[in-house]
Image (cartoon, rainbow, N blue to C red; front, top):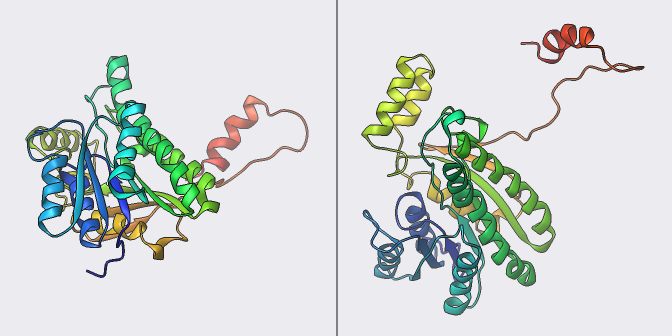
Length: 295
């Protein structure tokens, strides 16, 4: 490796396994010092301690931190762990989050809504809140948030769609706040095979959706035949945290297999106008579908 992140201090939430672990390993190989994190010690399949041990075994530096970043004070302690062990924080990757129980909106409970929003959206804010002041003071920082294609809207999981759409808005706002202080904030969409995005039950759900005609063949295969996070997700996130990516700010990327996409920026597409007086319902009935939403 070329040590693009040599001596940079990185905090990666949800890095006990899956995408977070792959990102942590990729950054360690580029010379970063890591604080790994997940909620509970002894999680089946790996936790913050096993990832930290893997990093140390390849000659890197890492310490684990256990705690749920949806708690504001826990997130502060996570960032402080980086300061106490390595002298500061340069990089924050907000990877932690849950999908929550799938449910149509009319059956969704308040508890399910709160758990998903708190884990993904509030957890990302909490960590940014505690890390951003330090990055601003030192004039250098990299923040990468994790969103999803579900941000565009998905059946049976409105809480997850809302959380991930909120992360895109959060990313763009933080990019505006911190850009003049040498700190960037971007986010990415991992389309990859992990414990959270695989399994017989999940595959059966998407197969049922496809058989009902609610997914195209391409969408079905995308959800059930994904590659591992080491192929594209981890390298892209590591790249966004380098000096060389310092002019990339407030952007949304997607990785799928060996492909990296950049999302278009939202903006006005078409318009209708009226010089005088308010619109009438009759005018809008005629113009909205035939002009504004044509095609």
